[in-house]
Length: 355
Image (cartoon, rainbow, N blue to C red; front, top):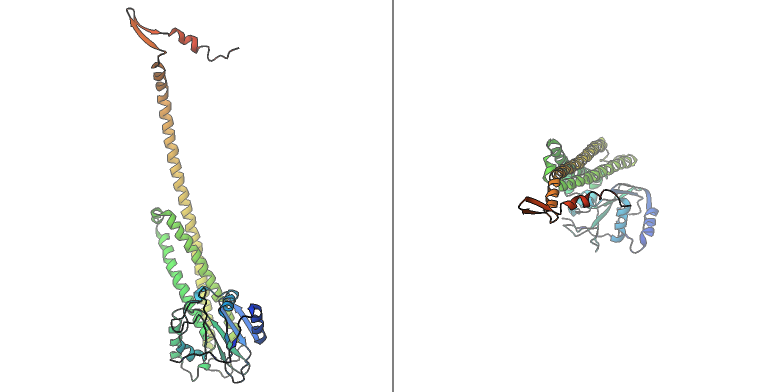
């Protein structure tokens, strides 16, 4: 396995600040484009010996560049195997850094990021910044190397690695989308809405997570579409004369990737709207359950009120006649209610106000 070393000719920008760093890059750029989650630099060749221009970027500056270029965290997981880099991309440079907040170590070398360059003529060179490619990228790239043998690695299409990256990103988003689609369809097929009766709060939380993830997938597909369009423009501006990698097949694959990405993005938008419908259904069902509970409580209160109205008069009369005010005594003439004569004297004047 070939070992990649740091060339002495690489330009290292240390503690100079982001502004000076970008100014030095701008001074050597003939054309540049930043789109989505991938950065492609087309530089003028400054190496008189014809070797690729290379950049080593310190971690603290590279982290700020990642924010500027909108490189997502999904590209920050694994690193390249050196044997694939040397075979496919010529010289490579691993930028090792001590920070662990943003960058993750490689399985092979412990590198956090990779910056490499290639030379395709006296005036044109490429510098690529690749962060955390998908795990299946190496296998797909190796298969491409085996299926398309050429006399020199420089004869391969310079944008093939980017197209392979986009394909892996599209596959990852497609797998996520299919998994979410199966869950959404299972909810929609449940006509009795049993999934809402199990644990309503948890199901609503799952739907909200689905909506968030679906929105992220839509944005990822939008970024992939923008990157494919960028690759189409970059491919059209290249000098393809006499190069083995100039063929119609690459243009067709770009169009195929663009069409496939657009279809899945529309599919993701459709299922995002269907998740919103399920969320509305969940809230409507919760509101209906609350209304039914309130109706039952209202019915119970009416029953209690009716029972109270029926038995309250008798209870009040019994309570009044059970007091000592109505003291019943028995003599030779029969029963006599003592002090009953005072009832009229105490009760009749009460409705009338005193003068």
